[in-house]
Length: 296
Image (tube, rainbow, N blue to C red; front, side):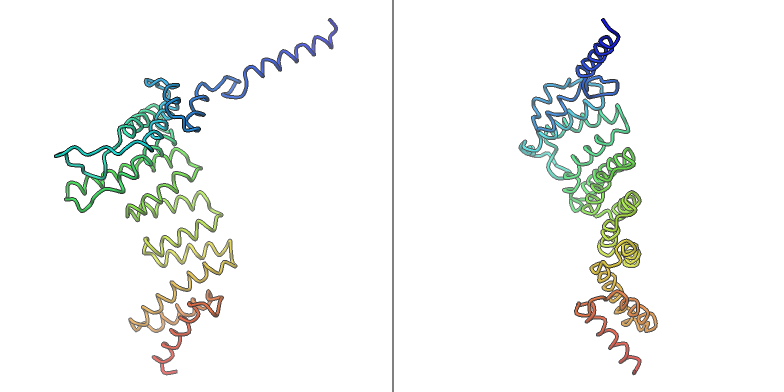
């Protein structure tokens, strides 16, 4: 056989071996969990559970089992509370949810940096935590707060395990806001801003939070101003700033702090770009009040 034919034959053998290995794990090894992962993604949960060993020790296999049981829980009936048995917060976990939680907990025990499993624990428990009854007596309230703490801890672990992603951060902000944990939601926004530094939309959202649940109007002005660096023609954000400044000026006028009120009105005028806006009308009204007070 000629040298050229030998080279061609060797190349064909290498190509055949590569095709047999196929894509997957490093070195060409097939992913042993590919079938189960596909079944979970296709919502064929019973088949996925059958394809995975219940006594698996691998963190990813345990995570997939948890996802499959959590998927089954979505359509499972809510268990009926037993007579005479107190339920400290919301409806009890469905049996399928309990199985899913156990698998997720085993996954993070096997691999503490498994971001997906930490996030799954938080997402599974979050609806139950939000149904906690703080008015159901001190014991029930403390237990409900404990579940909220556990959910926030799992979100925090998911965020730490995935230092570049934003899914867990976004989920934690939503949960903390709904649970009334303002400081935790604020911390989540700070982390989100850090991870998406050049996104003015995030800055505006953080400003909206501070202007609302965060009860920090001056902090909101700072975030809005940062957003305007990236989007200087953002009229909506400018009007939000004007609204805050006008509200502050009105309070200062009531408190007879006229110089401070005048400064706030001057700042507000910088952001009232639309003379037909309600903010422009409010600005004219407050400026008129200040002139009357000062007799000019």
